[in-house]
Length: 227
Figure 1 (cartoon, rainbow, N blue to C red):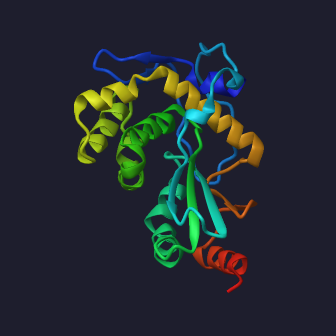
Figure 2 (cartoon, rainbow, N blue to C red):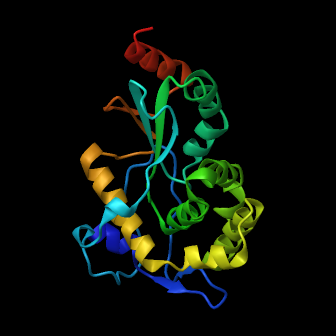
Figure 3 (cartoon, helix red, strand yellow):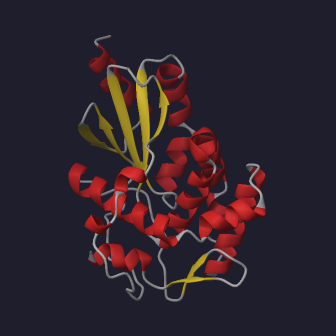
């Protein structure tokens, strides 16, 4: 409960809509250990108070594939951005588009900006999710370093508009406090079950691996496919 409170603590609805935090916030970093986050705690509920079954698993590829690859990533993690600009494109061409694997993307919340970015990505629904993820990672150096919370949120709004969302939809998503709390509870369940301690992390048919070169990942997947 403490970590969840820290992620949610200090949130306030901005006059222009969206979420901001009143205290210090830290940016995530690739292959960084999960650590305490700054901020005043104002959420007094536990993850068990939220029905996380309402959170949609974001999946591409063949849902019936014999091999499932799960990525745990933070939108503020530079190594995650590097993976999606490089290795993921190879993974998609070799295994996802060919129907050889099922790929699942699960968000990790090192910090509040990562949660805000997740709410924007999910605002577009399953069909737009991975396209928005691509835009978020491409623009990571801009929005994640925009400075004040309001500036970060404004940059994320720009990404949402670029993805074709209207202002009313964007504001409704950003101000959905229950969704934010449920997402954090969902993250905690995933983190505890799969022992997620750094990003990006991968589960290949249930076996956990830390960040790796694409060649190594391909060998692991090929082994699971028996090829």
